[in-house]
Image (tube, rainbow, N blue to C red):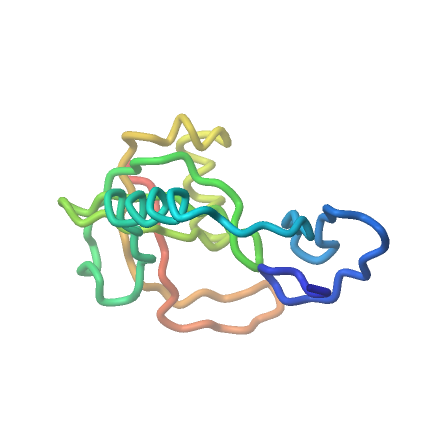
Length: 146
């Protein structure tokens, strides 16, 4: 495997067995591994038991819906956007914050995302104007409930 498992960028392996991707920072491992039947069954059971939290998409909740933050937000994905779980009236969704949402929530709740747990955020769609003057219509925005 010469490419990162996460972002598919070339890694330029030498003799290393482990290497962090220079593009996304994910650890890549060249150690040969084939899980046993028991391990496969255990992992399969974990996926079935815990489920996979779906990512938030437009239309999942109504505009103006209030959600309660359930987990700390951690950097993830190709762009490193903070991602965490939010409960919208019993519907738990994985939310990825853009800069507008992040700065607004940090301003209200602080920069330690573990302290956000239990705080409320409200969903809206807004037109966002960049410093360069570009306008992005109908952007998902999450703001603190003040």
